[in-house]
Length: 221
View 1 (cartoon, helix red, strand yellow):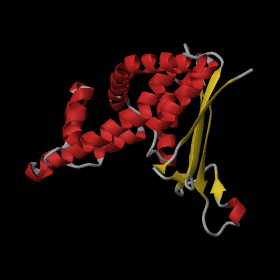
View 2 (view 1 turned 135 degrees about the vertical axis):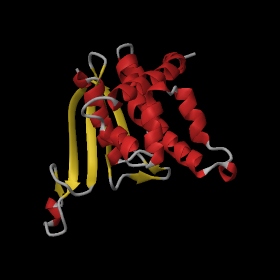
View 3 (view 1 turned 90 degrees about the horizontal axis):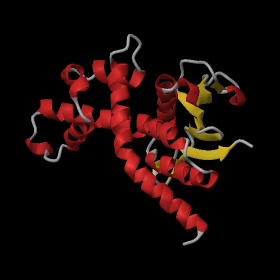
């Protein structure tokens, strides 16, 4: 086994051991945010704007485990489910997606980052990128918001660009502050003591698998 293969195998073993724990910790963080006086936007939306399903989630969220959410989100027999159960299944699916694609990567970056070598960091960034397939610039914005709540010192830099309006010259269609649609978002997060992981997405950044959020890792010299 060469050094490269050994590095990848070591990382894979560590990944498999920690991912389940990371999802549980991500859900716990989300449950705590839900009771904050200033809740996370995505969580607040789930708790308010999905009718009876939101009322149900509001009452059950703190008791739910990740395994229960995962099971509910499957909705294996849609034809035989009551409409009430379908709505709960849908909201469980949205909750699971937020845990899996927004918060779990943050937990892994914080927990695993300290132990990564520079070579392992490249494997780690690729793994995080695969986890985020299907994410968009709106999801990157959610990651920024969640990171600032989960571990503010992780956030080294972040930016967002909004549509400024058709009445602007083409080079001014984007603005860093605005109420128009979000066009792009990026964040640089601390990865251990010397590493940086850069996550970004843009409205035009689409690939064969749909949205292709970009994730890169590097060590500061």
